[in-house]
Amino acid sequence: FTIVQRYPAGARAIGVTHVDLYRLKAPGDFEGLGLEETLASEDLVVVEWPELGEPLWAASGRPVLRLAFGFGPDGGRRVVWSGA
Image 1: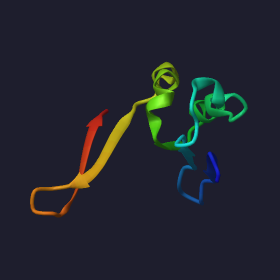
Image 2: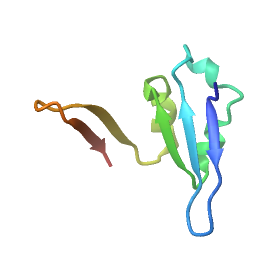
Image 3: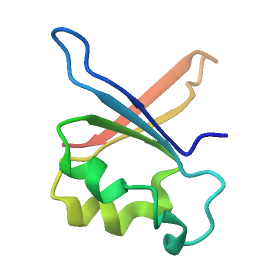
Image 4: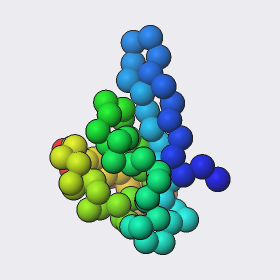
């Protein structure tokens, strides 16, 4: 189980860092993960189960886009986004 996985930038792209907070229980569990440094980088940061990190995301000053996945009334897949 990897909490933070970085995928370096390619020739004409930016790096992506994937963060999965599912197993963390308290904000103190972030210590040693380097999330502050990650948020200060130019990487696109994708976070699963982000609720625990809300104060950290807000303090970073970065734009936050939230995606919610579900099913529409017809049974088709649905993605709802909010934020900027």
